Length: 76
Image 1 (cartoon, rainbow, N blue to C red):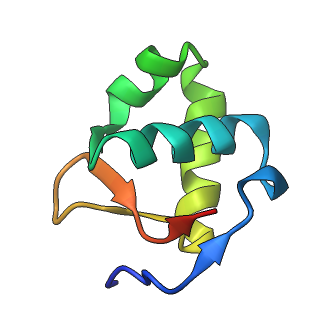
Image 2: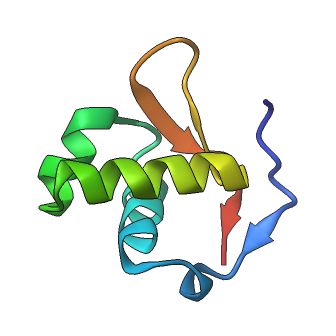
């Protein structure tokens, strides 16, 4: 899936956990899956749910075949 730089989302229309993850990935070009939970101090279950939701919406993606994630959209 290639990045859709033209697609922008309103970050205020996602859950709190999703927003935290999007902002973190916006600050860094990519971030390791497990470290996202640690950095944001969110439980693994809530974090995993948020990442799956963001991935299904096409907002984030895996970097290659690694455990890193990056934005797949632009933030407003």
